[in-house]
Length: 106
Length: 121
Image (cartoon, rainbow over all chains, first blue to last red):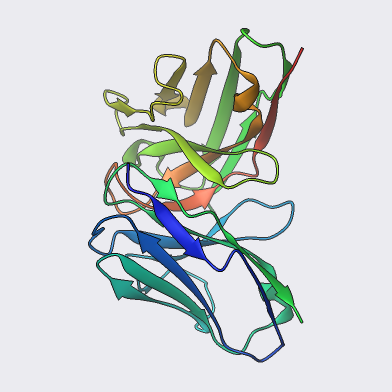
């Protein structure tokens, strides 16, 4: 199985700030990476796929980058509605998820 | 609008069985691979099963292989998960999800609201 290590586990940031979440794969996943947002009590929602493609309806302040084993999710100009947990997922092999990052407002 | 609505969850004793259902609407169900993903309380996400468009191919992680069976009825736009020999570690919210990307190995582009399964005596 491909292991996904996500960091940080939790993050506190101010409104308007830029936030970056990292995800590292145990082997090359050739951009087969997605990012999800999960608000409390809700199901996950797709944000990014193929490492850097924005899903339909997702605000442009979200962006993804990376290659090989290292990937990141960036949120520009943090909004209050971005408070959530974020998960990465690789799909180069059978799907596996990162442990998640809980984003809170400072 | 894509909609996925799960049902069938509840409290079940260890060793017993339970069958989950997912009703799909808003897209051509038979054109998409489908999957189940679970999330234990306060934990991360774990992929549970994937099924091909026709239902002829299924995929499972080792944690549920031999105990869980995914199936589908394209005429009814419905997805199912038969769970046998349930263990306490199967306690989780189970999500029905559609696979994007047009293949069996992909990202999950739409999710249901989830259904809770509690395995306890």
